[in-house]
Image (tube, rainbow, N blue to C red; front, top):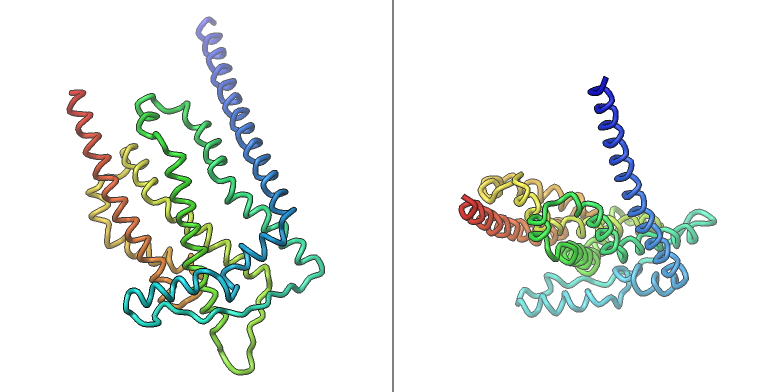
Length: 282
């Protein structure tokens, strides 16, 4: 009888702990959603400026990347290899409320990108109590590095990959009787895939650090898997870039491969540090 009672009390405590964790997670999600909503409202109030100066940037003939890439091409002494004629595209919508719905999409997507550090901070606050003090110490500045690589990837997609992609897609001609008239939703989908795809792909070094600390991967495994990683990176480059031209995919492949090499170096450093700590403990 006593064992049965104690078992029942233990089960109730475990259930209460699980419910408490769910409640805590709910509040982390609520706070993240509130911040995203506030950012979305701010963007929506300034939607015209945001659209004209940020969203429509890669298809604006005066976009800064066109001149910068051309100057960089001349500096490398490769002629006009990176020079692109500025695209001239007029987006359209085929439904009555299309522009309003696009404004809503721009507001929420932009709000998520802007609030990414805070959202990750809330996620980290939820996960942190489950870690040991030593593990927490080894993850100092994690919010900074995750945010840094995310924004670095997003900037790469927006300023470099975006212009190449849209320049190719809008200038490609199937025949003289076909004219490209993209909808704003189609443009937003492509731009979102490029920016968010690059932002997440650039998290590879942070992921390597975390998985090495956990013990899932080792630098030796990463080195042995380099050939398979190249294939995976090529597939990721093909998914991120909507355009099928080899130049856009190469532009994505090179930084991702360099990030993979950086991940190997980070994993090696972390692994050596773990071995040293293990020897000191022994």
